[in-house]
Each structure stands twice: as C-alpha cells, then as structure tokens.
Length: 526
Ligand code: C2E
Ligand code: CA
Ligand code: CA
Image 1: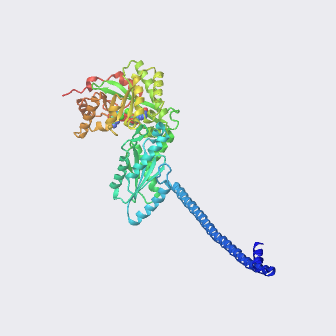
Image 2 (image 1 turned 90 degrees about the vertical axis):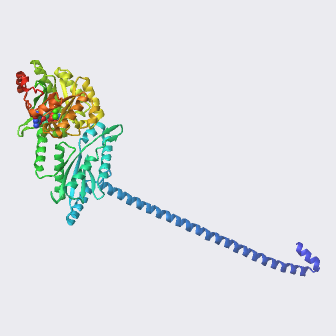
Image 3 (image 1 turned 120 degrees about the vertical axis):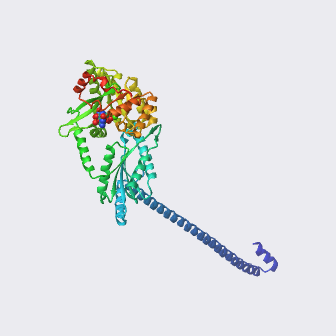
C-alpha cells in the first residue's frame, strides 16, 4: 500500500503506478523465490552433510562393533584353546605337584626307549617310594601330607637334568626316567642324589619333618627292552629296597621275582594270624659284666600253618604296611608283661622286660593309653617295662614322639634306642630325645676285635652314650674277644649268642633257675 500510493504520488497515473507496482512485485517475488530455493538447497546440503556425517558415524560404530565382536570371538577362541590346553595338561599331569602323571610318563618312557634303542644308549627307570609317608599323613593330616609331596616333587625335579622325566604315579610314589648316562655307576649316582635331596628337613607349618625314600632301579638294555617289564622290575627292586631297611637304593636282579611272591604270600597269611593264635614270644637275656641275667627282651615268633616258622624280619614290614602291627604289638606288650609277672611270682629277679615298638604304633595318638592299660592289666608298674624304639621313628616326627616318650617315662617306663648306629645315627636327635638306654647295633659289634675302624666306632658310641648318661647295651655279642673288648671300653650290658639265643618261656625259666655261674663268664681285665 505504501509503495503503491508512493508510485501514484510520483506518476500521478493510477494505472502506471499499478503496473509499476506489479512489475516490482514480480521481481521481488522472483528474488524471494530464488532466495527460498537457495535456502532450500542450503538446507538440503546441510541435511546431506549431516547425513553423510551420520553415515560415517554409523559406519564407524558398525566397524567398532564388528571389531568388538571379532575381539570377543578371538578371546573366546583363546579361552577355548587355553581351556583345551589346561584340560590336556590335566590329563597328563598330576594336579597336586604339576609333575607328569602316569599316562604321560608311560608315553615319554616308550619314546625314550625307542630313541635309546636307535642310538644304542642306556636308560634307567627309578621307582621311588617315600618311607612312612602314611605316618606323616596320619599324624600331621592330609593337608601337610600334600605340602610335603609338593616340596618333595620340587626337590626331585631340581635333582635331575632337563632331559630326564620326574613323574608322580599317585600317592607317595614317583618315577624318574634317566636317559643318556654312562653305565651302572652313573645311575647309582642319580639315585643317591634323589635320596640326598630329602636330607634337609621339610618345614610344614609348625612341624619339621624329615622324610626318606627308597629307590628301585631297572636298566635298559641290561634288564629288558620292554617298558612294561622294566617298570615291573624297578618295582621289584623298590620292594627289596624297602625290605632292606628303606632309605636306600636297589638295582633289579632276576631273583627278586621270588621275594615279592613270598611277600604277598606273607601278607595274606598274616591276615587273622592273631585270631588263630599263631604268635609266640621268645625271650633273650641281657646280661651284666658278670654274666648275670639282668633283664630279658621279648622277640616275636610266628608259625603259620602252611608257611611254617617265619622270622620277624620277614613279616614285620608286611604287618607295618597293613597296619596289623598295631594289634600284634599290643598282644606282644600284654603277653610280655604277663610273662614277666609270672617269673616274678616264681621268685625270679628280672629287672624288666624289653619290648620292640614299631614306628607305626608309636605314631598313634592312643599309644600311651594302650601301654597304660597293658600295665594295669598285668598289675606291674612302668618300671618293669622297657620300650625299644628305632631311629626310624626318631627322624620322623620328633616333637610328638618326644612328648609320648616323655609321658611314658613319667609312668616309669624305660626308653631304649634300638639298633643304634645301623641307620641314620642321628646323634643330634639322641641328645634331644628322652631316652635312657642305647643299644649298639650288632653289625657294629661284629666289627669289634677285627682291629679296624669298628672298634673305634664302638668306642666313640660308648663314650658318647655314657657322656649323655645313658645305659649302653652291646647287641649280638658272639665271641669272647668281642665281649673282652667291649668290657674294656666300659660297656656294662650285653646280649647275644655268646650267652644264649632267644628262648621260649619255659627254657627261659630253666635258664633263670640255673643262674649261670658268674665266674664262668666273668671277664677279668688283664
Ligand atoms: P632286634 O630288636 O635287634 O632283636 C635282636 C635280634 O638279634 C633278634 O632277631 C635276635 O635273635 C638276634 N640276635 C640276638 N643275639 C644275636 C647274636 O649274637 N648274633 C646275631 N647274629 N643275632 C643275634 P629276631 O628275633 O629275628 O628279630 C629281628 C628283629 O625283628 C628284631 O631286631 C626287631 O627289630 C624285630 N622284632 C622282633 N620282635 C618284634 C616285636 O614284637 N615287635 C616289633 N615291632 N619288632 C620285633
Ligand atoms: Ca630290639
Ligand atoms: Ca637291635
């Protein structure tokens, strides 16, 4: 309106003004239209830009998601293969110690055999069994037993070379396959190193335990060329090592086959022997310098219906393995005390009766109780009883054993260390243990009088025992020469064939009533 009235004022012609106004409008509209189009294009462009940008963003997101999925897949795969690896490790390794298990060992052993055969090399198979591991498990608990096995594994592994295999077969059994060595001596060295590796005590929480091992060895190609046979032979050799006192190495020899058959025969024959009343006690006197009987040692005898008489050295290891020794030992204790009471009732002076105690018995919580009730049953006091323990138990669980021995001594019981010098000769333990008597092993006594180191050894043991205030007994005295030498060294008590073998009770009664003429046996110092 304003513009139209302005044009009318300027031209004075309403038509021209209108025309002009229309033209102006047309231009104006055109311009506006173009502007709108431009705006629309800008908007479209903006839209397009943001679309592209968004697309890129989506693309990136898609890629990232893809990468994530890929990574997830990859890690799932890794996890799977790790799991597979773990599974296959578990199938071939022992969970507790991480050592190869029986299956892997057999595999490696077969391989090693093939290689050794191809290149003309030797191979040794060593079966190792820890001595009295069951005892550790029973007395200190499975947890500590496991800890012990782990430590033992570590020590074994550190002992052998990388090319050798140490495997755990289960329980306390290990196998070592040794390759690339030169002959028998080399194999012995390795086996001894394995035993040596256990020498240092093992700390289990607040306990310090010393464990020993027995090793059985078979050799390729000397003993055989089949894995299965060699394994069986190493096992036989191990049996023999166990029988011969443990803590030792034995190599397979063909005659061992018979021993093992006998052993399993004994084990089954022993079953029910107590109920069938197949046991008896013999007694061997312990004499003083003047030959007078001071006391007696009870020694177990077994006569089986079929096997006949079987010596304690042959059946006690089996009885210990099966645990039968607990009931048998209890029978020995009660029977020995009853017999002593009877001799006393007949007027014989016998200081006390000595009874051999197995480590398996002494490791039991109820051992002191069983001694107490045996004493009560016999009507005798503790001073009538001497318990003979071996060094085998001493090195095992010193603390608990010491406490039990201390409790027994409070009852008046005498504690003797048997077979001293035969095994570990743990002099340091001896000083710390509550013992009263030292019995020098007969293998050492046998060396007396032969002018060798034997005599010096006995002299040293005697001097040490006496210095510790112990009563020292020489076992297995067979000759006058030995008796003379031992007396000169200051020994006061003797036991051996020089006086008599172990005798059945009636023969002991006769022996006691004869009261051997002291002067006949008295050794006069020159
Ligand atoms: P030990 O306790 O050292 O018993 C002494 C062994 O030496 C006995 O053998 C005895 O007969 C033998 N002996 C005695 N004097 C002489 C001698 O002058 N020369 C020789 N060469 N030997 C002599 P035995 O009766 O065959 O007993 C062997 C082992 O069996 C015993 O050795 C002991 O460790 C074990 N034993 C015997 N009875 C029992 C028992 O009731 N319980 C336990 N746990 N072990 C027992
Ligand atoms: Ca004995
Ligand atoms: Ca002995």
